[in-house]
Every structure is written in C-alpha cells, then in structure tokens.
Image 1 (tube, rainbow, N blue to C red):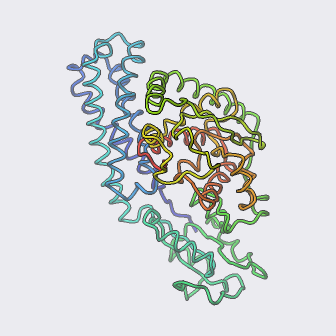
Image 2 (cartoon, rainbow, N blue to C red):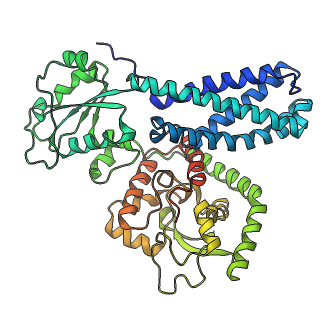
Length: 470
C-alpha cells in the first residue's frame, strides 16, 4: 500500500504566488529595463529579487496564507493589496539605500525612477497574485488538498472534531468515523447533539485505505479502557500516521486545549525544549530588534509624547508592575492611554469602549503604538520580543487560583507580542485568559527562534488590521 501524495494547501499557495508574482514582475521589468535605466542583467535581477522577496514576506506577514484567507477570495485580495503596499515602501528604501551601494546606476539614485520601478513591480505583483488565487481555488474545488481523516470514536471527542472541521476555514478535509467496536470497545450512549454516522461495513486496513484514501487516523475515544490498540498498528506500518486526540487537536488548532488535556499527556509528550543556544539566539535577536525599532520610531515617539501632554497635561508614560519569567515582577513602560485617575477605585479589566481611555489613547491602543515603549524593557532584559503577555500581579494571583497550569506561562520571559496575541483577540475575562493560556502553552511546547521570527512577522497583520485592540 502506497501512501498518496497530498500537497499542503498553504505551501501550494505560497509556491503559486512565487511563480506568478516572479513571472509577472520579471516579464514587465525586463520588458522596460532600458527605459528604467537598468543597464545590466545583474541590476535587473537584483530589482526583481528585491520586489518579489518583499512582496512574499509581507504577504505572509499580513496573513495571506492563514486558513481564513485560503478559500475566501475577498479576504485574500484585501490582505494581498495591503502587503504589496507596505512592501513597496520597503522596496523603495532597499533600492535607494542597498542597491545604490552595490550598483552604480541612475535607476538607484533617482527617486522618480526608483518610484516607477516600485509601482511597476507592485502592479505586476498584484496581477500575479490575482492569477494564482483563482487557480488555487480551482485546485481546492477539485479536492487537491482535501485530507481524508479516519476518526476512531463516536463520543464527545469525536463530536468535537466533527464540529471543528465544519468551520468555514477547515473545509479542506473529509472525516470518516468508526465506532469504538473497531478497538474492541462499546460506543458511548446518550451523547447530546446530532449523532455521528459511522462507517457500517468495516473492512481490512488495505480495503479501507484503498476505498477512502485515508491520510491520517485519529484515536478519539472517550474511555480507552480495555481497548485493543494493536488493531491500529497495520495503519502505522503502512505509512499512515496515527495520532492520539490531544496531539491531533494541538496540531490543527495551534493551542493546547485545556478542556481535554491531562497533565500526564503534557508530561510525556514531545516539546518544552529550551537549549542554551536557542536562549542565546533569542536574547541576541531581542537586543537587535528592540534597539533597531527604537531608533527607527524615535521621531514618531516624540510626536506622540507631545500629543499626550497636550490632551490632558498628564505624564507621557505609564509604568505598572507586571509579572515575567519565574514570577519575578518588573515595571512595564507604556504610553499612557487612560486618564490619570483611571484606577482610583482599584485594578480592573479593560472593557470595550472603556470610558477611562483618552482620545489620543484610543488611537494608540487601536494601532498598538502604546506598546512601543516596552522595547526599552526588552533591551534591558526584563521582557522578550516574543512571549506570553505580561499580567499584573493581582490578576496573576486570581487567575492562578481559577485556571490550572496558569503558572507554566512564567517559564519564559513575557513578550511584547506572542503566539496568543496574534491568534486571539484582547482578553478581558477569566475565559479569555484561559483561551490565551492554551496558545501560550503551545508556544512553550514548540519554542524555537524560527517560530519567534514567524510570530514577529505575523504581528504585522494584527497592527495593520487593528485586531483585538481595546
């Protein structure tokens, strides 16, 4: 039995973008390279690489390859336009600073020619991106990316998976169910909700795989007692991966779902590796990124400081005690966004359209600019660029009593951004804090420097589209 090749949907879309964008940009730039004063093939190639690389990087950062944009054409194009627009600004800087140092050419010295190059590149890139998406959607309609997943179980866990894959952003999969009798157990009775319709004619592994083209097997039984899991070994031996329920949910949702997760599963599962090299690279990246961003944003920060003072003549910065790695506290630095007397009645959660927020503060919160001074905390080592959101000690004490495993989020430094921040909106309740903890646990479990870089890039989407601000 040979396992069929199943292309990844997001990888395929990224490759299609690369092909069509690079082809469109290369064709147009090459056609008018004399008019743009691009004298040599090396100069033309450098411009094409610069434009395409920036376009793809910002397409990823703006969320063009997230599940919610894969099969939603309007969302995909909106994000692509934003990505190309911001990428154009960076491309213009790279052309006039970077390429001008490497090549002696009028194209890289002249602002007007450089702007023309960028506008031509953005137009060609948008054309390429609009070509690749209909092709991708046509491939999706022909089920190129549709996974066939065999789920063993018909209880509450199986119901959860069925409901998860009914969401609009999860439709690139087809589920097949087998009852617990496949493993020698009994199907549970009295499960609320729409009943699951399992396969009736249970055949051998080879027959099931040949008929249904199974790509993955998931064990989603509620009570594994006295079940015979050796029946699943032929799947594994024939190259079809077999997942337990918790591992599968973690892979699909990008979080550790506390509703189902047992402590012993976390204890024995893979992950939670923090090597000294990773820690050293993470600290080096924190220093480089925070210092660079502070220097780049310094003029803007000065203007914001003046605006805050002029609104109510209060202090510019707001310093507050927060909790970071090991439960240690530090004083976080933020632009003040609330009235000076905002907490005269004690600490409280921020609410939607909070009346304590000033007019300037509302703009700063919506754009997340109020968070920029935290880069100072990162530079001096109290925070990291990526990590769990730092909470106040009073809230940490409350949440530690109400949410199990909450203390684990303090195994790493608190971050300016994080996996939870880019995947879940602003939290202002115990339920929100629990959901964000599930994302934080996933980050801790799968920590790597490359993931940190990915999270920092994807923070661009949160900033530009003002998601989750209050």
